[in-house]
Length: 260
Ligand SMILES: NC(=O)c1ccc[n+]([C@@H]2O[C@H](COP(=O)([O-])OP(=O)(O)OC[C@H]3O[C@@H](n4cnc5c(N)ncnc54)[C@H](OP(=O)(O)O)[C@@H]3O)[C@@H](O)[C@H]2O)c1
Image (cartoon, rainbow, N blue to C red; front, side):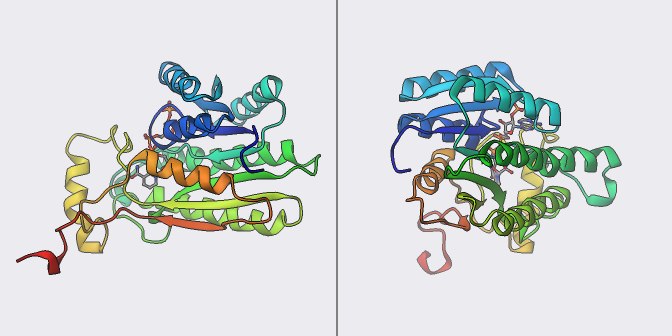
């Protein structure tokens, strides 16, 4: 493993954590296959990967559609050969009180975040299985998997679900050379939540501290998460990190003891 050229797939690479991860992997010279639904934004990521020194391959991907996932993996394999790593990152979140959401809202969260993540993991395992090669599947989860955020209960449920999937696969795949990891992240400055109704993010940010969530205004950058992902994917092959929690540091001077 180490720094030799490998091929990584990054889902949800049209922005945020996915884009930053694709660029960071490009910077260590990897082949980076990127997928998402917005082709124009994906093309921008491909340019950035190339500028960083990597070889990009962009193709449309809707993880909620199993055929799209299979087509994407086939296209990546045709371009680079079998991929070595999957950063299972793409997701969305419907915001709102649970009882006010529609079955379609529930289905959207589950179809994308849980089933879509499962479709991608399945495709990756099928690709890795025939060989004895070392491979990685990293699941991008959320602190909401264990500390649910009110008004994002459906989302948190799907993140808890993918963590269950990851733990199950860790057992089922032991001895195959496939490493499974969970990266649980907290507040990160991305477009996450940008499609929510106007003012919604601000209103939940006011409520969440009551529940012990988002107690301060520290945040991470997508590049911070990307650097951690590169670290996990470049560990020696005999080492794995089953789960990693990343949280923002509270802004300096914001704690109770730092006030005059
Ligand atoms: N930002 C945070 O504070 C935070 C906190 C905890 C966990 N996370 C997790 O971090 C990961 C990255 O999120 P982010 O913050 O970077 O959010 P983001 O900026 O909203 O990016 C989400 C990405 O997922 C893609 N996506 C959504 N549905 C898709 C689908 N059906 N098929 C393919 N791609 C799809 C989007 O691309 P298209 O729209 O182009 O398809 C986009 O590139 C997610 O798993 C999220 O749950 C984020």
